[in-house]
Each structure stands twice: as structure tokens, then as C-alpha cells.
Image 1 (cartoon, helix red, strand yellow):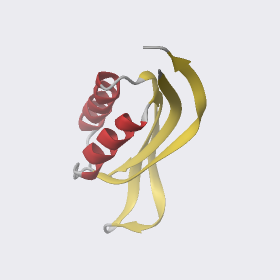
Image 2 (cartoon, rainbow, N blue to C red):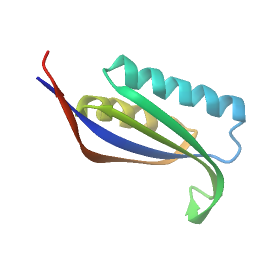
Image 3 (tube, rainbow, N blue to C red):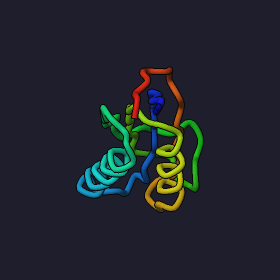
Length: 104
């Protein structure tokens, strides 16, 4: 039995990332989530915003929000991918609630 939870991920990209590179990153993370059993991936581009405090000497960032259903394995893979991506300056993944149980 696999338990799927709903997760929300918000990550901030460096302000000098092009829109094309931003879209490529979104597709990369979407494929990564689906490859590891994630479902119902919903992505919102929140746009460029001023940061409350500077992060790695950046005062602005491009915000992207992803909502999806998955398990804890997906979170580990996603965190590792974001950690080693030099375009991502900050990310936060939160578990929203229990969604459903699937018998495998």
C-alpha cells in the first residue's frame, strides 16, 4: 500500500535566469516528480519579487510554486536536485495533508 501526500514546493531562482531556462527547470522538476511516482503536478509562476533580505547577495528572485501528490522518496530526490542546482537560491517543501491510499 502506497500512501500519497500532498506537497507544496516553493523555490526561488536567481533573478538573472532567463524565462527559457526557467521553463526548462520547471519541466525538469515536473518530469522528476512524475518519474518517481508523483501525480497531479500543478505549477504556478509567481514572478519576480523583492526579497525581504538578501540571499547570496541577491535582493530579487523569481518565485515558482509546485503542488503535487507523492511520497517521501520524491521529496528526497527533489531536495537533492534543488540543492545542487546553482540557479536555485532557496527552496521550501511542505507536506499539506494525507490524500489517499493506493493498493499496489
